[in-house]
Image: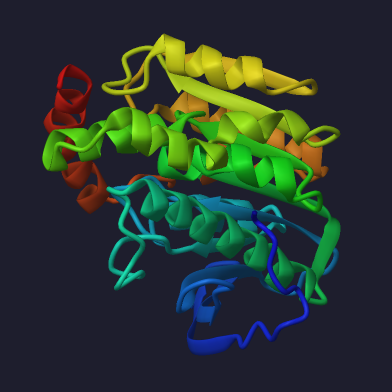
Length: 296
């Protein structure tokens, strides 16, 4: 389901290069296995070799810039990062998430784009292909169970506040706005839910991060995802909202450093990590709509 032609050309095209502190930011794109091109930032630590690497996938209110400040902090520890863009503007036209078939294509798009991102990283001479990790928040975590279950080259995954059953959430949205059958939608789309794949992640490790005051992700959602995974796995809870707090950042940096074998960014470096204000404003505007779906 998430297979693709690994021998096809990545067709990497670089639009610009910018030096930022100890890193070079490559503004690039590569060919998607399913639709169009994937725009991304590749954050390369200057003058390093045998680098661990992390792929980041943003929340639904963000884009490739969401995790950029975090990637720059990791670059100071010699870590390379690939931040891919799966915002709606990147996919136009994009699969229609409000039909069962479209939702299934939507998930396949994201997961195969991520897998192609791994191809890009392992093609680079400075990357140690035995030390690749993944960080996904919300949307990125909701695609992370599938990704963890099928992509054997990634050794450590951090999934922040995601759904194990994304088809249910999309079905609620379709029912609310299009008056469609939730049962039929889920029947068609649930084959690509993370709950069906995350148990295949071992021996790769997973850290689940959830927030106690999350506006949309419930304790039941967290339990479903965590129970579906197998050891090695860990779950950590934070006194915060869906935007998370600084302790969650510190914890995932330390956890990734342990699993990918690098020195974690220090407190000063992590103090410069932030969520873009645009993301926060989009998220806060979306909260009443997303909450309304569960009451429909």
